[in-house]
Length: 221
Ligand code: GLN
Image (cartoon, rainbow, N blue to C red; front, side, top):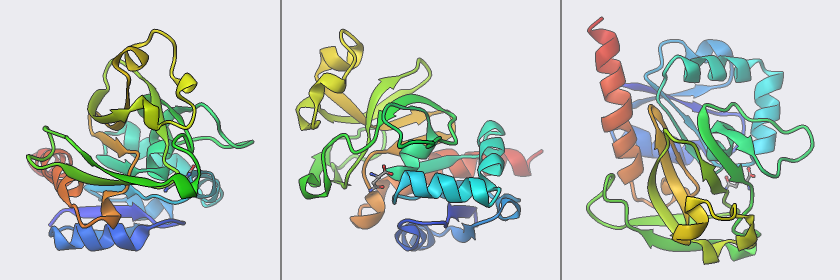
């Protein structure tokens, strides 16, 4: 089976492990650079992005994740994980950086505080024939996307705590929608947490369309 790492420094590691295992992957918790060796894919969980990034830098795993992303390793980031993959954070806490790789700008906590957490059904035709149940918990919003970024799902911008965050005149503002699921090459990111809902469609899609093809290409070399 494919071996999928989960960055296990903080956040909802166990929930991702349960879904990936149920879908037939072998899971490895990643805490050090060496844990990345031989992985077929990597998940960056939800949690607190600034804490995860700081720990990753201290443990020397941040640079290794960055190198893996540049090398084409399929990576799926949920919520805090999306922030970690983003090239730009509009509102970082002091000193907060990201691993980067995904050509987007995100705003942390853009849908408001914990108490404004919400659930909704998303239409994501590329990923699932049925609506996908999505849970947003202090979720980030994607404010800008680069050219190579495919938007898989979005929600009305009215959901944002401060819709004026959206850049004027950009396609995001004119569509009245904010992206909440994006894909660029081998990178996938969602503002929400499929790992907590029992809806496995994003994990299944990640394994089928990003992890297994990359593994096949590697094995046939
Ligand atoms: N607000 C968190 C952050 O900025 C993300 C929340 C989550 O992962 N549920 O990292």
